[in-house]
Structure formats: C-alpha cells, structure tokens
Length: 248
Length: 318
Image 1 (cartoon, rainbow over the protein chains, first blue to last red):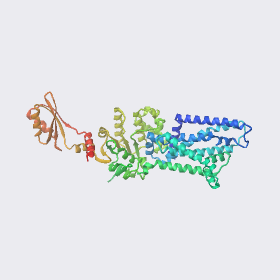
Image 2: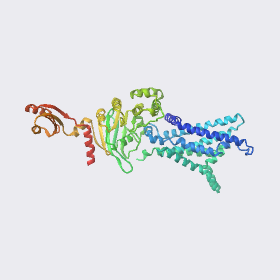
Image 3: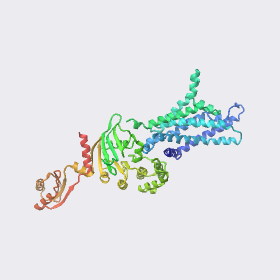
C-alpha cells in the first residue's frame, strides 16, 4: 500500500512537474470552455428541443467531448512506460522491491487521477451556471461518473500501448488507434438489424453508455463493463511488463 | 560450509533468441567480500548482474542471494540488494532529496527513519551541496553519486555495481573507489568493471568472464603469480653487451635474456627466470664478481592487464 502510494505520487509529479501538463491541460480547458459557451448559445435558442438537458449536451452531446477524451487519454499515458524504457529508469524501478502489479496500477491511478482532476475543473462551469438558474445535479453527476469510467478504460488502454514500445509517439498513436476501435463499436449499430446482435453491440458501445448516463440513468451493466475492462487491460499490461522474466 | 554465501551462482545459463550469453557459469561471493567481476565488453557481465537483480530470468541454473532464490523469492531478494545499473538513469524532474526519499520509501524504510536515512546517504556520497537541486541539472559525476546514494539508501547487505566509475573524472573516480572500499566493511560487493587498476585497488577476489564462460576466479595477486608463470627482472649494467648477455644466460635459474636498450655505455637487459626462482641476488653477485657497474635491478611486475589479456585471448584461440 505504501509502495502504491509512493509510486502514484511519483506519477503525479512526472505529469504535473512538466510543462506538457499545462499545455495539455490549458488546451483541454480552452476547448471545454468554448463548448460551454456554445451550449449557452444553443440552450438560449427557442428552436431547440426543450426536453434536452444541459448535461446531455455537455456529456457526449458534442464532437468536442469525444475529441477531448480521445486526445487526453493518449497524451496522459504515452509517457507511462515508454519514457522509463527509453531512459532506462525502468531497470532502477523494477530492481526495487516493488511488484509489477503495483507499478502498473500506480501508473494507471496517476494518469486516471490527473484525468479526473482536469475534468473536475470543468465543474466550475456548472457552479457558474447555478448562480443564474436551477440545476438538476443528478444527470450532471452521472455524466461525470460516465466520463471518469470511460476515461479509466481509455487510460488503461493507453498504458498498455505505452508498455509495448520505448517511443512515446508510437505509444500515443497505438493507444489512440485502440481507443478509436472501441469507440467505433457504437457506430456498428447502424448496420445491424438483428435485435440480439444489436443488444450485444450496445453493451460494448461507449457512445450509448455516455448517452444514457447523461440522462441521469445509472445502469450496473456499464459499471461491470468498465470495471472488468480496466481490470483485463491492466492485467495484460502486468504480463507484458514481466515478459523478460518469464521468457527464460 | 558454516556460512551461506552472500551470492551463490550455480550453472547459470542465459540464451537470447539465437545466441548463448552465458554458458553455465558458477561462482560464489562470501559475506563481506568485495568481488571484482571482470571481462571484456559483451562477455556477459551485465546479463549476469541483471539476472542477479531479478530483471531477467535465467535459462538454466540457479542463483541464490543470502540463501534466497532470485526467481522464486524475487521481492525478498530485491529488499536485500542495492543495484547500480550500467547507464545511470534518474528522474530529471525530481530534486535529489525528493528522489532519495521516494526510493527510501520503495525500499521499505519506515517513515520515521526516512529523513535520517536520506541525510546519511547524502553525507556518505557527498551530495550535501546539491540535495535541493533538480537531478536533470546535475553533472554526470553528481548523477552517478545520486544513483550510488539510491543504491545505499535501503541499507542493503549486498551491492551490485555495474561499472560505477565510468564517465567520471580522475578525482571523482578516486573518491568513488574510496567510498566503495569503505562500504565493503559493512556489505558484500559485486563490482563489475573492465578497468583493471580498479580491481587491484578495490577487490579482494576477481572473477574473470569471457564469452559467457568463467576463465578464472582468484585474488588479484594469485592471478598475477599463477598466470605470469615466471618472474622477470630488469637489470642495467655497464660493459660489453655481448659478454654480459652470455654471462647472464649462465646464471642458474635464468631462462632467457633479452637485450633492450643502450644508453651511454649501459645496457638494459630483461631476464626471465624459471617459475618459482628469484634470480636477483645471483645477478647482483655476478655483477660484483665481474666488476660491472650496476645502475638498476628491479622486478618486472606482471600487471593484471597482462593476465587479463592472456586469459581472454587464449579463450578466443581455442
């Protein structure tokens, strides 16, 4: 537990001590701020369907939502293992009495909590909004929950990609590609008429998960999907990290 | 055997895809010993050290550290060792003290003692001036010392140092060697290097490895003696070179005489003796009898370098 904490704090420092954090973070907040301003304009338009809520627009309702998650996750994770492999610090790290699982989980928690912190800052927009109107906090909170869970899955994928190469750019591209595949599953629905298959697709559709959550619906099936997804991907990463030791 | 060996390597083999890096090597390091681990580049030194620290799995054989198996009880082993890798790499964004505190934590030093422990290694490694500097801004010498401090911060019984003085200036090299020697009073050290004087200064025993095989294990003195095979004496005498050479050749115990250089009437001869014979006194008496002026009479030390070259090239020939 102490190791996990120390390792996670190191991950935080690696990100927040670097100028990259402020570039990425600044760009992200700028984009979200612009989205917020755009939504204000849209919601004030009387022609818009009044049954739509703010949270439905903000979480998954725009292209920018998906773009920012699909960009943020690889940027937060591309350095995780590739940088340590490139510089050789991975040897120093793994010769200390820490388990592979601790190292992988710490990398995950470090990036995930940074992701959460950046999204947390967008909460300011809702606080701002509250001073002018009454807000239904339920869907907003479930929207955040879905975003954090989706971010967790994408970040675990990014970390897996990072463990496969010593090149950050390759790690980012590979992670992005894998995330795109998962993201695209949701679009398959258009081509499917069989209701059984359609059900299967919607189970894997991150688009659908976020859409539902933004309406304020909490479903346990996506919760299981994200928890098991993150677990599986991190497990694979641990195995990859241990490769030099089992490939005797 | 009464005591468990600190490091016990038996029939250790490692295969990379197609080539064998280690062909079943065996050696032991006793507790408190400083063992030199010597070999040309690519001999398998770093591979061996990586297996010892649990970074690589062996293809065959067994390695025990303090009686613990490195593959079966990796965590327990890693708690006991301090490893200095060949290429020192540290996190550039951290400050020296911050980094050492983090490493102390990973190595299981309790929170209450961590500060004291970091202070100790900072003092030991001469890092006082830079303890608040960013590691990324430090010179190569300081970074090497930070890595060494990291190696020590967990109070390891066993230090595994891969080329600890590489890239340092002569002054730093001397300091580092002194430090390693002083550490040897409390810990067992396996010191990998290809710098021979380092071994002679620091180590009590040497293991020489070449092409994945051990070619010798002995003390530096014994190695020199055993592998030199004979003693050589350098003598500088005044007189007719031909006559002197002939006379020297007849001294009992002398195997061969070589004329080397002449200088204002003196000639330098190198006299090789048969194994186990000291011919210096006989040469002196000969010079006195013949009334030759003697300007120099000295033993030619076979350097460990000669031994090393001989051992590692013999291997190549066979």
